[in-house]
Length: 171
Image (cartoon, rainbow, N blue to C red; front, side):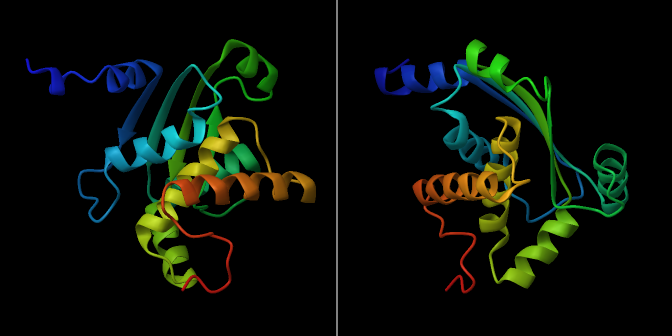
């Protein structure tokens, strides 16, 4: 094997971060695993030595049921995050390990992207960063937490080449 084909950085990266993706076979026009991987990696790479994240895309009925059962809100939402040891942020920070699942509802994501004048890729990138930050223990329940989380989202998305998702006019 040629030296150029052996990239020790990529090998170490894939040892540090594993991503599983569950997309329905009939889904079209969605980001690929490499896109989700790049967005999630950019979000967590500085804070965790090891991470395992599962990403699932589901229909509106399933998204609504999950949102109702786990958050008490009876509607389909764009993204949900489920940390393995939710509420144990200190454990994650000390162990350097992050494990969780992120669930997207493509129908809601597409509706929001169109309503906000964003491309589907821009919106998925934002929601992936948002979901990973939730896994990392960030939240937006109060104004100070929301501002801190949004600041991180803007910085990470900028590093990925995307505009501020909170601008009123994305053009």
